[in-house]
Amino acid sequence: QQQLKEAFKKYLSPQMLEKLSGDGFKMKFGGEKVEAAMMFTDLEAFTNMCERVGDAERIVEALSDYFERTTGHIFDHDGVVIKFIGDAIFAAWGAPISDSQSSLNAARAAWYLSRDDTLVVEGLALRTRIGVHYGEVVAGNIGSRQRVDYTMIGDPVNVAARLEGLNKVFGTRILISEEVEGRLGGEFHTRKLGRFRVKGRKEPTAVFELVGPVAEIGEPEWVQVYSLGIAALESDNFEEARLRFEEVVRMRGNCGDGPSRFYLQLMERGETIRQGVYDMREK
Image 1 (cartoon, rainbow, N blue to C red):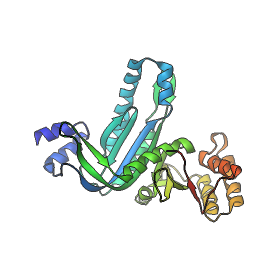
Image 2: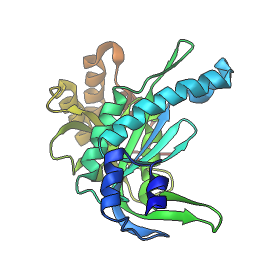
Image 3: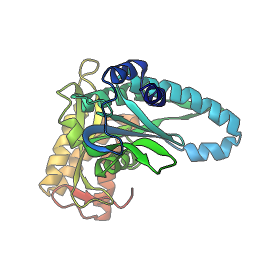
Image 4: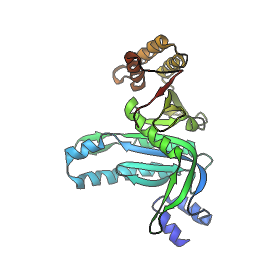
């Protein structure tokens, strides 16, 4: 028990570790099926920044401060840091401790992390992109006889990673799946960006943007206009969709709107969108 407690210090907040210790580490080693929410983060333009700065020690120092802040928000909302992958974080809710509010806690962590996530190195400021999904995965200590990692495996993990990557396409910060959005209990404003067949999956995935907590901000007017554009796309009414997306771009002024521009460019190029579903070619 003490050895397990020492091992999990790397993954859990102190309060979660005490709870897990109190339960006697009742978990199946080698992996077990669980329902969990998963988050992937990534720093925009991190590779380019590394090339420009060049000094690895300065980069590591900045990353250490960045990880201290971002993992703090994950721990504050009962999350587990599965691993760091370069500048990225893979975190989860629902294992090794079950969590009936895993999706909501993941969304809370994502939102507050995004408010405190800027990495600054020699005057260069980078922001974080986040993807969150929910589903059944296998979680446990997985590996070889010589070395194991506590991790999660399954299609939902891949979907969470794909959602993070879609932020690059849309110019957004936090994307969540329909499975997460349906479990938020109205605590957050969201907007449905559309339905996409992401690379590696046959079934389309409904993707939502996390706009902000209802208790902190009102729903922006452009969210409803955008939803009319999506509804028009789903009815194959492309002219109506175009008008609505153009309206959203005007409403958002200087900041524009990445998702609206994305659809406007697709329609300008004559790309195929059937009943609101678009096949993404990029990861």
